[in-house]
Image 1 (cartoon, rainbow, N blue to C red):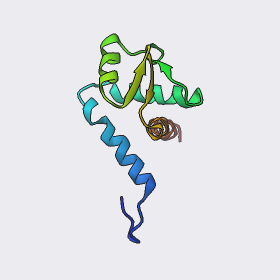
Image 2: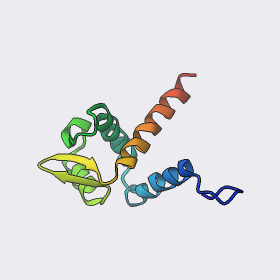
Image 3: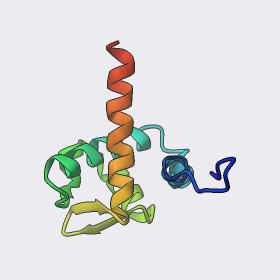
Length: 102
């Protein structure tokens, strides 16, 4: 996370935070996919909260996501606690798409 010159590499820091955020959801097989879908929809909406049912999460998945502390959930709508996480998860979707369509 720190470069040879002693500076913090912000890209690596954000990547580390995003990967660490998944820690509590590793036993949820579709957790990363659901978070990525949510992030893409949040970014597409200009940062607005998104209904959890819009990401095709089961009621149990919605419960797990809401308890993950990654999201703020109110009235069935969710957003990431930190905006940078929305962008990180949406960025992973773009990277995955780019890798699958060279």
